[in-house]
Length: 140
Image 1: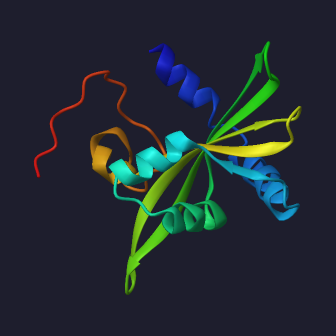
Image 2: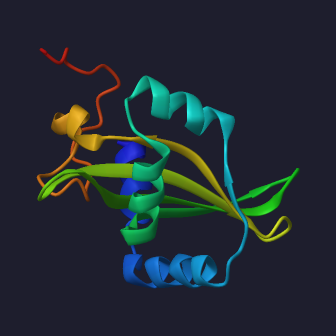
């Protein structure tokens, strides 16, 4: 129940959060692509070009701001974008992004294809609908 409340709280003012992050991207703030992201791209068969494309054309589906002693105020977004996989074929990607005013850079923490976790998301992959810790096995 607490995870659902946290998600709901983070889905307020999404258009505003999308505009804020898009402005930061337009200002050419440095983007850090983490080693963790690189590892997950390989593991999940997502190319770095697909991640970059999803970042460029995406929008915010969740936002949270916390205060961390080491970094000060830290903002996090879950960003939904689409990557081309073939002619007229696209796949959704969720990127988890972080920003700290102290470092003035956007950090791309991880990326995943939410359609693999189809039971957790609505049909557009914008809203989380399942909160179970254990997930059903996906049949290949």
